Amino acid sequence: MSPQITPIADTAQDLELAERILAPDGTRISNPQLDAYVADVDAEQLRALHRDMIILRRIDAEGVALQRQGQLGLWAPCQGQEATQIGTARAIAPQDYIFPSYRETGVIYARGAAPGDYVRMWRGEEGAGHDPSGLRVAPLQIIIGAQTLHAVGYALGIKHDRADEVAVTYFGDGATSQGDVNEAMIFASSYQAPVVFVCQNNHWAISEPVALQSQYPIAGRAPGFGIPSLRVDGNDVLACMAAMRWALAHARAGKGPAYIEAVTYRMGPHTTADDPTRYRESAELDQWRQRDPIARLEAHLRAAGELSDEHLAETQAAADDVARDMRAACLGMTTRPPLAVFDGVYAEPHTGLERQRGEYAAYLATFDGEV
Image 1 (cartoon, rainbow, N blue to C red):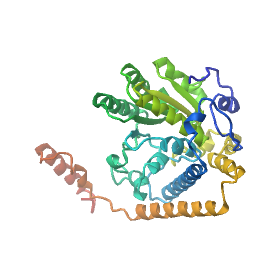
Image 2 (cartoon, rainbow, N blue to C red; image 1 turned 180 degrees about the vertical axis):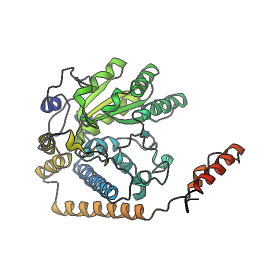
Image 3 (cartoon, one colour; image 1 turned 60 degrees about the vertical axis):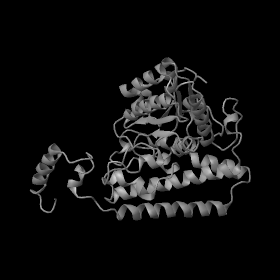
């Protein structure tokens, strides 16, 4: 499953180099490489994936609104990337461990995140927005590409313990230029670690287009490290699920790492601190709106007579309920006192830590009511 190594000239050609099962208009396409991996997916499961993506988009919109209203310090939107996140995450086994970047809201949703988990970190209340051990998802990683090294280290532990697990790590196209990602791939290949690399190529690394750093498909880099790769249409939820099932089966069978490049698009800003109108043409955005992942699956289901207005109404109501609970959890959070940052650092009291606590308390005392 190696990608064609052909220079990318434009968006249309870019997508032609990606494997898909559903065309942008929802038509089912025969794909010899992927079909077998989703042969069991029936209409009920497709409706569940559609529901997931609608709920995720609503969560994302609420996150943006909360940030704009001053309730969050920052938010990293994922609108347009719902198929990549939901399709891959729903294929991952419960025992597998995930190492995300900062944009994988859909991944923690699929793993069972609670309403407050989406916003806690962005509000600055805790170091991790969710319980990593409960969801089996590491804390969202702000440092670009660092999570790939963590995933490979964990995967080496899996191999040493001979456990029935796979480590999965997500990162963006911009991260592929980071040394951490390339070093992680070297270690993963050298030690045949059971890890899956998922590159969400959303075409923009903040304000730089992907073609600036990669004139060839990113998935073409992995075979150079000895890692098999697959390039899929990231707005096709079925293709994303199939790709992840392929990659997980490869890693779980003891064959070492696998690599997925999901070609998708970031519809919103890089974060709420970004203004994409300064570097991105509106015509490009309009072009990608025609490839909306939710509309694509909806068109497929309607053509098959498997999507009712009642289902859509119930799904939208469920999405609104999730957003309401998320907002209530955000507004109801109680900020810990500043000195609590020292709690839990050591199991037993430590003189050095107590000295630092005292120094910090003295500093805080210079501000009214901060201690």
